[in-house]
Image (cartoon, rainbow, N blue to C red; front, side, top):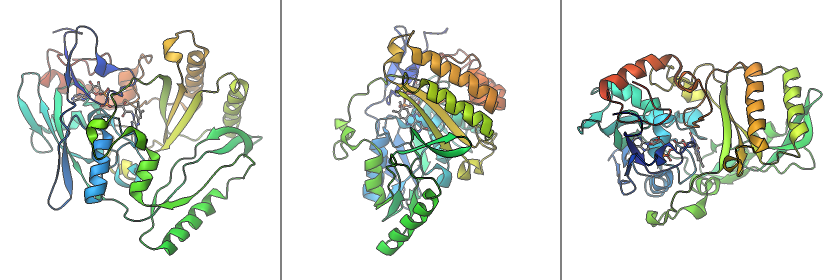
Amino acid sequence: MSRGSGLLSGFRGGHSYEEYSFGDNTTFIVDLRHMFEMYVSPDRSWFSIGAGALLGQIAYPLLEQYNLLTPHGTCPTVGITGLATGGGYENMSKLHGLTVDNILEVEIVSPNGSQLIVNEQTYPDLFWALRGAGSDSFGIITKLTFKAYQAPVDYLSSRDTNTKLAIKDGTVVVEAFDIQVGTCTIDVGESDDNAAEAIQRVNHILNKFPTTSLNTTSVIADRYVDFIFRASHPNDVGIEDPSQLPNVTREMFTWRNFHANNLIEIADALRLYNLLVETLDEFQDIIIEMYAFGGAINDMTPLDTSFNHRNGILYLVQAFHNGKATLNPYHPSLDWLTRFYEWTKLVFHHTESYQNYADGTMPDYLERYYGSNLDGLKEIKRKYDPQNIFWHPQSIPV
Ligand SMILES: Cc1cc2nc3c(=O)[nH]c(=O)nc-3n(C[C@H](O)[C@H](O)[C@H](O)COP(=O)(O)OP(=O)(O)OC[C@H]3O[C@@H](n4cnc5c(N)ncnc54)[C@H](O)[C@@H]3O)c2cc1C
């Protein structure tokens, strides 16, 4: 079969940046929305979940009924299968790895209609490929099994408000941009004393940053489950009744992303500052996010799974226009994002991008997503889907 006549598997989360799960008018779409059944092992060391589950349908029951978690994103309407098979980054990742690192087994319907149980022992080559490039290239995933971890029980110090920082004349001072410094999670045990101490520790670090009149930083102690509710969008999701989850809507933003493996020189930081200052008024809807990598993410080597963005990666950067630019190909934000991306290439010399932030404008997407794992992936694609039945514009080619 050729492009466009392929089965486009697993529409569920519908959060593919490029809408690959929506297909086109020649695509056969399998909707897995009713497949979200969860089973937790008696020793609570793993759980399995239907491949149609959304993150909210996993996180809340796991936490509330078992006090367990596996690292995955906090947005409750993202689908587990798209997220897990392409990486899956969140605030627990430096402790427990990415979502993909915690996959123990995959149940998949192959292009010839067989149901395969795929793990380290059976179909190990496919297991390797699915963990990094599993979205819609090898079959329809119907169930996933993950390692489970004890959730932090009582308190958690976190910081999730905006602070205003910028770099000027070599010093981090100016009140120019919203930089969401992010969320820091510390399990502080049961007592209020521990919580107070954790807050003090976090504040000690934060106080190294200059304060400004716009600074709205706060550190609070919380129950982990409450933190998850706060960090996600609790109004979007009904834990008692998952059927209340809203129908998925298409996101309206345009983005560029890359993995950075070096810190930039102060002169380049100033250039970035100037680029932002020059365009600040015009591009108020531009958001730049940076996610720290390292920690448990590097417990695996880039070759252990087909997800290769590991050793040497300091952080993942995503810049996006949070608005309607997608609807207007001449929107100036698109041009700004392209300029920003080209400039960062010169400064960061980056060669890798995150496959879960699919970007249809990148000509070298295969190399940027999979690096030296690409040849192995093509070989496995030819073995399991020689007719290229599972296809989207950035799927693994035969
Ligand atoms: C609002 C938002 C928040 C996000 N937050 C995070 C985050 O915190 N961390 C992070 O790492 N990423 C995050 N992402 C990126 C996210 O990981 C990717 O967009 C991911 O592809 C979404 O998966 P999905 O199942 O929701 O999407 P879908 O569009 O349903 O699927 C994505 C791809 O996977 C394929 N697929 C889906 N189900 C199956 C299946 N059963 N079998 C085979 N192929 C299948 C689809 O065909 C499609 O190609 C976020 C994205 C959005 C829009």
